[in-house]
Structure formats: structure tokens, C-alpha cells
Image 1 (cartoon, rainbow, N blue to C red):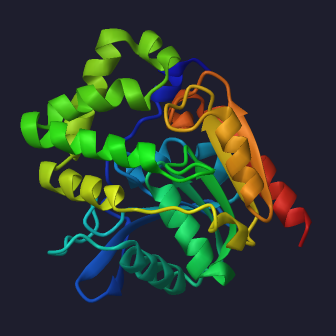
Image 2 (cartoon, rainbow, N blue to C red):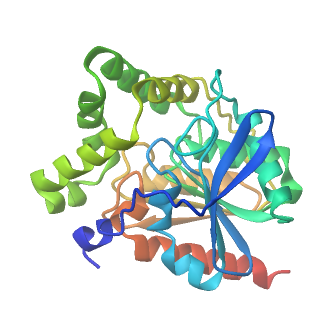
Amino acid sequence: MSIVENMSRLDLSYRDDAQRIPTREGVELYCESRGEGTVITPLPNLVATAPIWRGFTEELAQHHRVLVYDLANHGASSRVEKEPTWEEHATDLIAMLDALEIESTYLIGSSTTTVFARDMALWHPDRVKGLVLSGPVFGPQGMRRQKQLQRNWLRTLESNGLAAVFDHLYPEMFSSEMNEALGTPGFLGLREAFMAVSDPEELARSFKSAANDTHSPDLPPQIAAPTLVVVGDDDILLSPTGAQELADQFQDGTCRIIPKAGHQPFFDDAGAFQSIILEFVKDVESRV
């Protein structure tokens, strides 16, 4: 499948019949569930809201149950006055799983929410069957580069607005292959979509929150859940060598590289991304 065909999966529409699950006082999470069987939960990030994940998990939903949702203060979920911490997001996720009677799930963290996925495995190991860390924002030594980028994006947003921050993000987040394939029309279309679903204040809070995240090489060895690190070989944040070194730090870690993909590899090659996850889940389930 070409990159242009792959990006045709992009879907920004919310469904009126989707569930809205109360989690804590003042918070309801927008949630969609598709498929049956072992549960896989992609965690939303700054650009990958619930509808966007829908378009990149079609194959997964043919074999497993896929649960997509929006974090509090993002997408179609409730707004609260103060930007939630990862601890509060964890409380929401556990409450959602409880409401749906889901004992445990595989988590797919991507970009900023690889921190959240890592923390869920540390805080609630009994609820996490396995981790997929797609385009981690931390490496084997830490996450200094990510914090520098977040601060730069925030300055661009505060100085020049949403269109400018997208212009800043685009060449850093997406692969050279995608940039060439989509050309100017694709770039302008994605920028329009980004501006349609983004709120400047919400985005600024997210950048500030992500810039305060921390990571230490001491954390991965504490995680017992099987962990898959997936990166594109054109990821600006983490090289294939760094990804392998990070995977080796986990008790049960593996690494897969997607050729010619960028920081969000499912945008470049949704088929390869899902095949890798299906293989990972099949391997972990075979050990039970």
C-alpha cells in the first residue's frame, strides 16, 4: 500500500453512538470498541485521537478487540479546569476498563503516550498484558531531546499560532518518504485537519506537560510486561540503534524497525505496523 493510500485511512469523525464512560468526578471518556477477543488499547496522543486510531487499527480489529478513546481534556472527552496528570489519566483508564469489565489489555503508546504506557506498566502491572512503544519519546539514556523539541514547539505555538506550529512539527514528525509522496497538497490537507481538531490552549498545556515528563534507565528493568519497541528508521527522536538499546533494558523487550517510516510509523505503513503488533500479541499469548 502506498503512503497516499495509507493516509486515506485518516478519519476525524466522531460517532454519536459511541460510549461515554464516567471515570472520576466531572470526567467522561469518549470510547469506541471494535472486534472481539484479547483487548488492545491504543493510547491517544497530541495528534492521534480516537477517530484517527480507528483508521490505523482495522486489521487489529479483525483478530482482537480494539478499544480506542480520548484522554480527559482531549478530543471528545470531558474538559476539566486543570490539565490532568498521568496519574489522573491512569485513574481514568482503570475506571474505563473496570466499567467495560476488562481485566487486562495490551497498550499501544505512541510518541508522548509512550510515557503513559510505561507508567501504566509500573503502576498497574496486573492490568497490562503487554506494551507496544511506538516512536518512544525516551531513549536508553533519557529524554532530553524530546524536552528540547517540546519547548521549541511551545515557543512556536505561543509566538505564531497553530499553523506555524504544524509547519514546525511536520518535517520533524513525518518521514522524508511521506513528505515527498504527499507533496504540497498533502501537507496543506494535513495542516487543515490539524487545525480543525486542535485547540491552541489545549495544545500548549499538553506541550508543557510533556516537557515535564521524566525518564531514567532505571525504569525499564522494573517492567515485567512483554514490551515491543517499534520505530521508523527515519524517526528524528530515536535511531534504530537507540531503539534496540532501549528494548534491551526491559525484562522482556524486543525491537522492530519499520523501513522509511518516521516518528509515527503507522502513518507511513499501517499494514506493517499492525502486522508487527499481531505477531507480538500472538507470541505473548502463546506463552500463557
